[in-house]
Length: 403
Image (cartoon, rainbow, N blue to C red; front, side, top):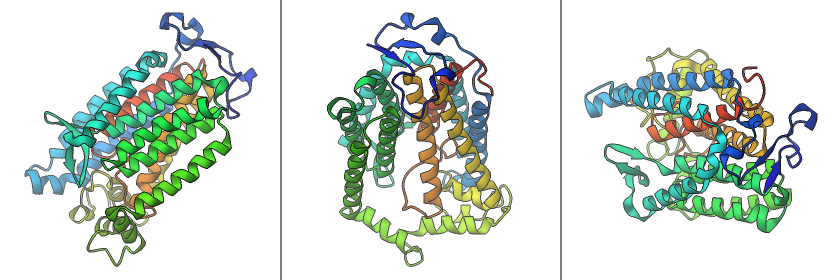
């Protein structure tokens, strides 16, 4: 099946006279990809700089947020710093390698990756996962713990990009263009919920709806599914004792501050202590009181040590990351590249937004990391691979990828 980029693109794409109309045969061998697409220009230097800066900043903040905890539990203040530094080196390697690979080579890997991630998620659900914090979200491979839910986000994006580009002429239909994508995403969501990982399930749903909207699926289908999804989310919270307890604690932080709301309450206190300019790097006191400050609540330590100004700059960095991703999507030479870039940009933006909202107690507690900054190898490596793919798309989006 041949897909003509531009002729079947959604309304968010630029006018046809702003880009070269290139045909891509999605099912054909890679050697059949036209030279106009295989040729690569310079990558988006701004996007690359933002990602590298966030990775480096993450190493610094993980050390600042974890030194006390590492000293108490491991008698080594550099325990988490050493691990995060190794993860960062691996992430930069993954970023460079994935940015140099033509993203069209992901065609043949789409279904094997999707199936592999599905198997890993199932292994967590059936009891083979490593438990921590009441959830079995990790698979232990020797000393390394892998979190399949992080892989699932990128796997869903790559599969949706492939499928929607391939079905571009039927994306407005319910049985071909909408329902199959919702079923696969729903299956992955159920596997995440069983771990349980409610936050990742919500991200998967938002990624699916975003790409369906960008691809041109009927708004009525998306709205209907959104209503059903909202009803399911409400039921999942109300009839799950621990989720409902978190919701009640979220509504009454002060009342539950010594119990289930202790972590979000201390997080809010961190932001308040930072005020406008912050206390200074390494001078935050909430690392003594905020549990697991180097993981999901690292934003609270950033707020305490760098204040409102620091958090604003961090939000600006994520906004720039998303905008450069959208830029790459609009300049991509084909629908597949556009959907990949839109999906990855959405993945970064949604996770950062939810993490910051949870740290500020705007949303109930969710187990989502702050992209590129929170401690953890699985999240960092998957996000680095996603950023590399985004850079690969940007390299084929115009003669000058640096502007």
